[in-house]
Length: 139
Image 1 (cartoon, rainbow, N blue to C red):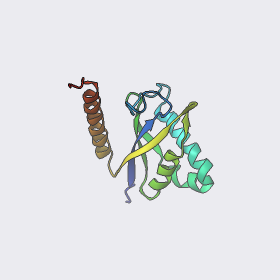
Image 2 (cartoon, rainbow, N blue to C red; image 1 turned 60 degrees about the vertical axis):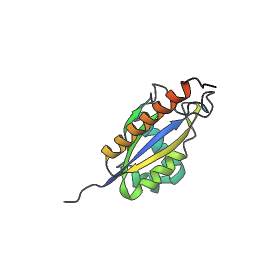
Image 3 (spheres, rainbow, N blue to C red; image 1 turned 30 degrees about the vertical axis):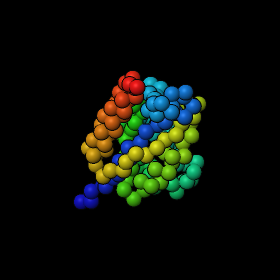
Image 4 (cartoon, rainbow, N blue to C red; image 1 turned 90 degrees about the vertical axis):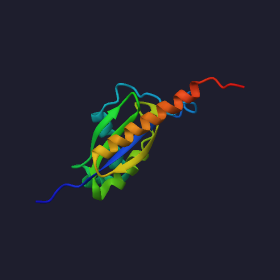
């Protein structure tokens, strides 16, 4: 029996048009963005940019396992052979529901547990950085 081997891509959605972008790069997303809507958007981008061959390669294995609108981070699962194709499709997304976005892949992992741990570490460091920025500077 052959085991299905996959890669998990931890990604974040950045909103460059927001006025807080340079102060706090992680801005919460709309609550209307769900895992199923993101999955449809990614499949559409694969079809637009890589055609029938691209969608045929990733169609059976492409799923968004997790997306948090509060932290604008998500985990995408795709087959190991074609994770670069899904990565390229993520990067080529320029807008979500009419808002310009930049999607950045933060980490590629072989297990979902390691991707989740990386997301937790990123969130902890973001909270730490924000708390340092909010402290008054003593002169």
